[in-house]
Image (cartoon, rainbow, N blue to C red; front, side):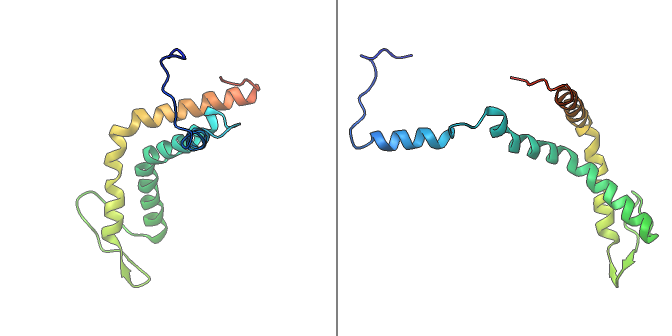
Length: 125
């Protein structure tokens, strides 16, 4: 920390601007946990998206009776549209699940720990 003699004097016209910028960075009364929540949810969504797309393709193909495999696209007509290529692309998202499995496991462990802490009313600093 700078000593008072080492601090730079702020011109009188910029003092209100500095105060406003300082307040806009961290709003008063907002905890670190609430500030980090959107980024945490975005990270979880990014990690789980390939798995959710794979499950979506498998469910829709099962409901429509289409066949999807890794050998190539198969014709699948739904409402007059051939969406076999889309199902093939969604099915290939399963390959992205393999390198993301450790991160998916971390999100599950983190959710379990958060659930247990919330169950017992323990607040994490």
